[in-house]
Image (cartoon, rainbow, N blue to C red; front, side):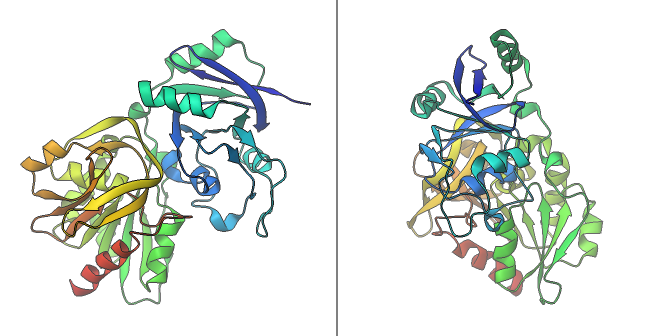
Length: 360
C-alpha cells in the first residue's frame, strides 16, 4: 500500500509524495546536493546532521547499501528527499535497500517530489527550514512546525556527532595526528592510516593540556555540522595549540581556524553541497574539482585583518577554499579531499600536511 508523505517549508509550501523509510516526523534545514552517486556517504556524513537532504540526481538507491561506504556509525541526516526511490538495488556489495536502511535508523524518506523545481526554489530563496513527515499529520500542524523550529545557526549540532571519549587507531606507527573531533568522517581517518600515521580522535572540548598528553605530532581540526561560532571550545583549543604543533583543518575545521585568528563567518544562501565544485590554487594556478558540503564560509574581506592568507578560491563565487598562516605551520581547506566516492583531485593535501608533520 502506498503511504503519503509530506514536506513542508517555512515559506508555506507543502509538497506531497510517497513515503519510504521509517514512519516518523523530522525537522531540519532543507538543502540540496548535486552528486550523481554517493547517497550512502552523504546520509552517514556527520556534516548533514540537522538537515533534510535532497539529492538533485533523480534516481537514488539503485546500488543499495554497504557498510563499507559509511562515513560514521550510521545515518546522520534527518531525512531524505528524492525524485525516485529504487526499490530493486543491484550491487555485489549491497546488503539492503535504501528504504530498509532508512528504517533501520528511524529516518523518513519522501519520493515523487519534483526535485528540480525544489532545487530552483532553494537557489532563488535560500535554504529553508522544513519538516518531513511520513505520518498522518494535518497541513496546518506541519506548517507550524516548519515555521517555528530553530534555525540551524542556533543549534549545537557538533555535540550530537562528536566522540565522547578518545578513540585510538594505528598505535604502531611512529607519527600520530590528534583529531579535534567536530564530526570526523571515516575517510579522513583512513586517509591518515593509509599514510602510516596513527590517529587519536579526541572530543573538541577536551582541555588542550590533555590533548598534548597524547603526544601528537600534529593536529587535524575536523569537518562537522552547523554554525562554527557555536564550537567555542574548539576555537579556543586552536588558539592554544597552533603555536605548539602543525595544524590542518577540513571544512568546518577551516571555519574554526579562521575564527581563531580573527576572520569573520557568514551563512551562505544555499551553501556548497556536491562533488563538482571547482577551486583554483592561487600559488600554482592549478584548478581542481572538489567535493564540498558546507552552509557557512569565511568572509574573504575579513582575512585582510588577520595573519591568514587565502591559498585557494572557489571559482563559482570566490569564497575561500584554502587558507594558511603567514608564520605558523597552520593551514586548512574548505572542501573534502577525502571524499568518497570522489573526486580525488586534492588527495595530495594529506601528503602535504603530513610532510610538515614529519619535518616539524
